[in-house]
Image 1 (cartoon, rainbow, N blue to C red):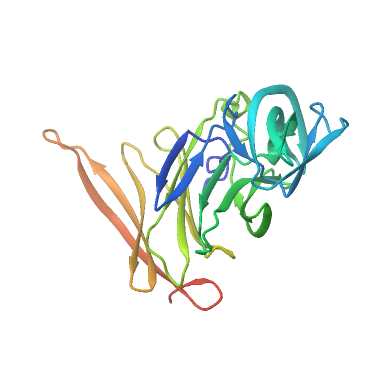
Image 2 (image 1 turned 135 degrees about the vertical axis):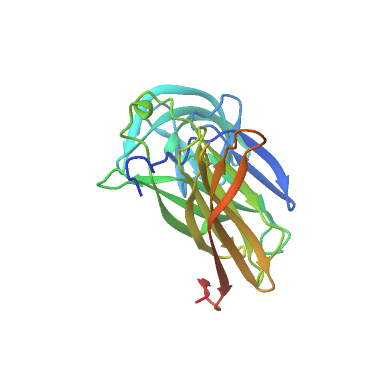
Length: 283
């Protein structure tokens, strides 16, 4: 793995909003759009009178609370080695309309809304950055929220292009696509996230999560790529009570005449099953 190349900024997303399997899936640009609504990512977040932790708190916003972006300030705040802007927002606290400032690191830029456990109440899956480590790798969390409380979370490392000149100019745009599968195993639903740079030959990152509305599990993760010369494809399918992940390495051949030909170089299939506690790879 080429470490300096295979680094991504998780929260810089292309806009995607659709419904699949009776779920609402939303991902957004890292620079949040004025007028759009986003959920609070933090457990309990202060709504402040100004863009600083020194400003007074107007009230508390719980996880999953929708806030509307009014504007982005020019001020950044750093916490746990991770920096983001402050945003002026509108929301509601105890039925009262309020306006104030929230730090961008406390706002979820990607989320899914669905009744995962069948209790006829909507659950939320929130995704966001939590910190950067000493090597400046960003760490993200998936958080399962019920009734404004985080009931389960899953932490995973995201790699980042933060050493590139493009990243310094804030022009490095990544996209994320999300898919929620209709198939279930032992009451678990499966979510696929794919994040990638919008250009050929750069690696993308693949994550497969499972939730039953009570807990979260990471089933698998991998990298994929595409380019003129070829790349790596990942495909998810289901086989009875097993989840199947197929990894294909391919090349594109260009004959002097005719269309390009895709040639498979290598294929690997892994199967995952539920062992009563989590999902494990079948040996």
